[in-house]
Length: 137
Image (cartoon, rainbow, N blue to C red):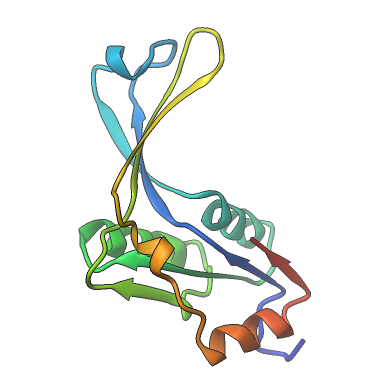
């Protein structure tokens, strides 16, 4: 690991979670939603950074307002976003989420060509993965 490379590199999806403002109901009973950054690998990168370790996220978001929001949220949490690409022909994925009364989550995903599925690893991204202590995907 070089002195400037992040200790943990996470690869995968970053997406928008629209989370029900009311728990205990399915999506059909949700009165409204709040926007949150989501995607398991992106969430792991934020968690690692919150623990005081160096983290980077590699992925793609749409060249749209949601993609701008996600990149800014990752950076706000001190996650290295050098490997976050912007896909012009694809949109940032959106997931509607609620916590039902039985404790299960209700999910509904939107986007038939989400940006994260169009990611192509560049040589600098490959180097970042190779130099990391931990690679999570």
